[in-house]
Image (cartoon, rainbow, N blue to C red; front, side):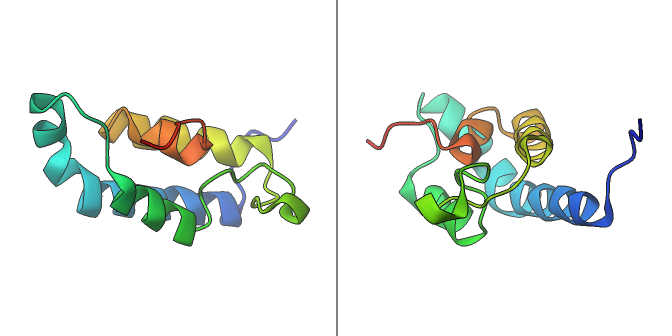
Length: 95
């Protein structure tokens, strides 16, 4: 069994890391202080990047990616901003 990430998976990892570091980490303390989750602006960006509901079949509006892609995205983003991983999974109810 090969436990190495593919080039596409490494690119996904780099994209999520850059997004979290640039867009989310600077606001994470504010979100914690105000006891709130990232707002719709971040959800819209995640959707535009193709990270929202990424394992859902494309015919239903998902990304059609494998489960490992969700794990890479959520694990990495939750290490930087805990609530961000839930957005990427597409499990958070809209406010």
